[in-house]
Image (tube, rainbow, N blue to C red; front, side, top):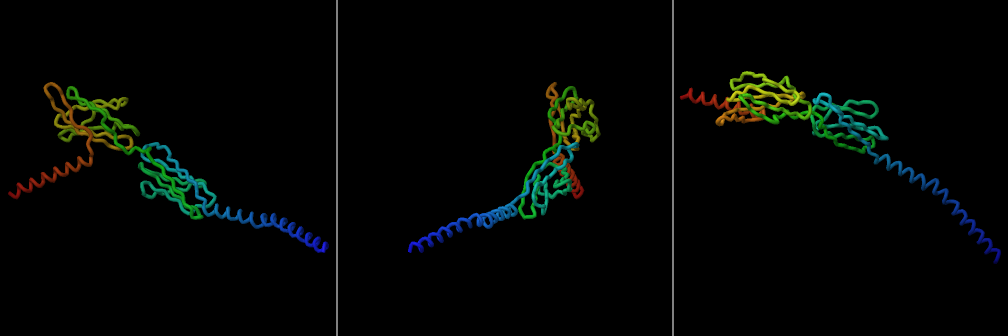
Length: 251
């Protein structure tokens, strides 16, 4: 009886030792590989590319380059860039860099899709280009001479582009130009003076000025005008004149 109990006790101890010795084997050869494999699989399926977009400085205020750099463990499936929704042509550079040339300010959207299908998108804004015309910041008139100060915050004034048309449509050059203060002067035509000025990015401002005397005081009126509105108004006046002439002819 005692011998049977001793034998059973030995078998029980051997069984427990066997179970204990199997756990490291299970952890090492089953559990750990399962965790590692699934971690790698999760990484491969969910890793997104990292994007960096740089808007370079401009030399002429007319164009600039936008550089996209892609960082990813996987090859890229597709790369695209748009400016205000319009596709841009990309030039492949060293490594995973792509460059697009833009000619106007706006919102850049860069999108990259990895080979694993995971996408990434970044946005950047281009605001280094000069797409705004100069402005007439101040005006004055004395002794029949109108003085105008022109301002431009980016590319600067193209002083060679400045001229005016009098009421007869004849071209008039400035009497004087002060490049340091952006100030110019014209001999005033009281019936109307139309002034033109451009900046170095070729944006144009136009202004119409008239003058009259109130007693002994000269008064200047007018300012910048929208060229498109001016053309529309002139076209309307021309059409009205043609309609009037046709009516008189019929009578």
